Image (tube, rainbow, N blue to C red; front, top):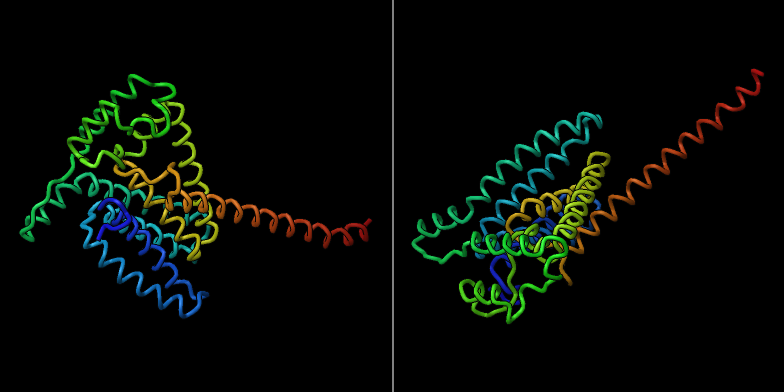
Length: 283
């Protein structure tokens, strides 16, 4: 069932993305009926497939993302200042809960497998992160080079492949920040944090200004990515669907802000023009 996705985690993350797409297409009344009907299939099919993938981390992050997005979607009747407070408080609670569950996702998965009578050898991320820390100490400024670590012949990579990935290809540190620091050093890590932070802030401002199905989807997607960054590497890679959507989130959020600023300027200009004759008449 993994097919072209290459790994169970990638398969589960893709189904989580499918469910998010489908949910917000289904809730968007401006979409054609045929597309909303297909969205129902996407939700049901995605739920079945993500369960088959047994991707506990992706499922928890999906629930956290949808919870934050639904919370933002329900803020329409509230004034802007109240939206910020409600979304901030609710998002913090949801993030803490999901972060706790994701930290113990391997234990939850193992318990689920034992409950169903199945067994599975779970990959341990701690050895990966220990090696990443050693690389960061050895190459702190510019890193080892973009995607230069996971190359055949590198003794560190060969050892980790031998323990976790016999195919000797297609592996990572299962942590976006460690992966960025190893590849590009603290300079690259700083740029990665800055990029993610700016995008997250821009999208959050968008959803607070205008909580629509479109803005709520992108907000939920960014939350999903943030919840997954400590345990998966979905950004800053070539031909990555997640990276393309992340860039789109920033572009659409920025365009929305620019349109709003133009409208506000137009309203102020119109108001000035309307009061100018009265001022001239009084003179």
